[in-house]
Length: 177
Image (cartoon, rainbow, N blue to C red; front, side, top):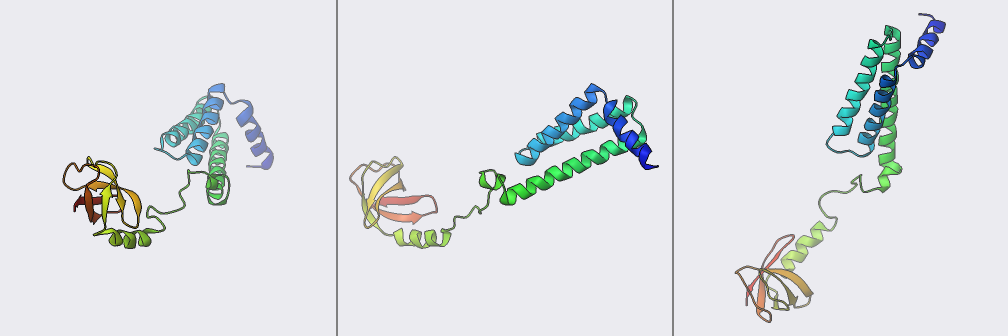
């Protein structure tokens, strides 16, 4: 196919495109870009792909030739690839990298090792309840100040002397001293 014929097909592709095909084409691109930049359950991505496919089918049904449809599919793939590349680039060092959408750390806190040592240090410490523990309360622990604790055995009233018997990453359990 010569270059003049190909340019003519390209011009005809868009100049004779029915409104329904234009609407589904634009809607498809918008939905895909939403999926690229705000990842979720994939609903926008799936609807975007369906919309783009519908646009191609509508163009074919309403008088698109094989070269026109081929050009349209190639353009859709190129625009999607460029959008995906922009999204990847932006998530590494651009605007998206500065938003909470991109998680840069791990689920384990950076001071995880320090927390383990801290937990072992709390075992056996004694203190006095500042509030009643039903089962959660606050205790004034020696050398640590006021911290939240869980009563191991039911209700402990304010002013009770307690001792730390177990420490998990998120809970400190006490019993009556």
